[in-house]
Length: 111
Length: 113
Image 1: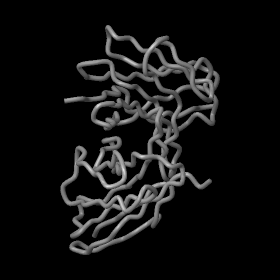
Image 2: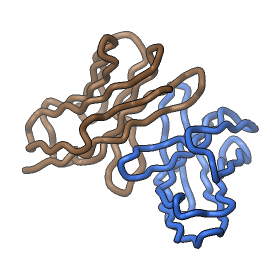
Image 3: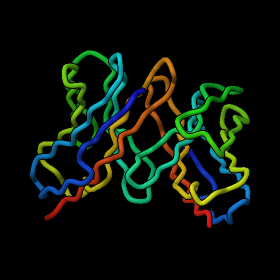
Image 4: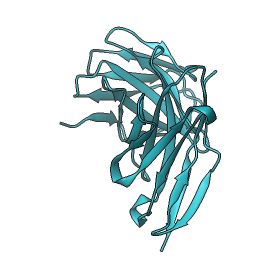
C-alpha cells in the first residue's frame, strides 16, 4: 500500500518548456487534488477532481491543465512553464471522512 | 471568500513547555477544520480534525485542538513539547459542498533543548 505517489521528485525546466507531473493513489479515493506550496503562502489549490471524469479549478489554475486519467491517476500539466511556477507541488487524495493524504511532493524550478 | 489565518509565522519553545498555535477562519457556516504537520522535505500529515460535536478534539502525537465558534478559532495545543515536534504546522478549512480546502500560511515551530 504505497498511498499517494508522485513523479518526478525534482525537475528543472527552462522558460517555455512543458512537462507533466504524475500522481497516483492506491486507496480507491474518489477525490484528488493538486496544490502548490510557496514560502509564506501555505498550500494553494490548483485543481481538484471530485470523481473520475470530472475536474474543477481551484484558487490558482492559470497556466495549468489537469487530467483525471482514471480513478487512480491525476496528472498536472504545465504547457509553457514560467519562472512564477517555480514551487513545490503536492498531490493529495481524500477519503470519505474528508482526510487528505499527501504525496511526497515535486520540487520544480523554472529558469 | 473563505480564508484561514495563522498569525504566528514562527514560534520557538523549550522542550517540555506547553504549546499553542493559533488559527482563525472566515466562513459563513461551520466548516470542517483540520491541523496538518509537515516535516522538512515531506508531505503533510493529518494531526486532527473537527466536523461537529465535542469542541475539544484529540489527535495524534498528543495534540489537541479546541473549536470556538464565537471566535472563529481552532487553536492547536500540546501540554509538553518534544524535540521531534519541530516542524511546520498548517491549519485548514474544508468546504464540504465545494469539495475544496483552504490552508493557512503555516507556523514554523522550533524546539530548543
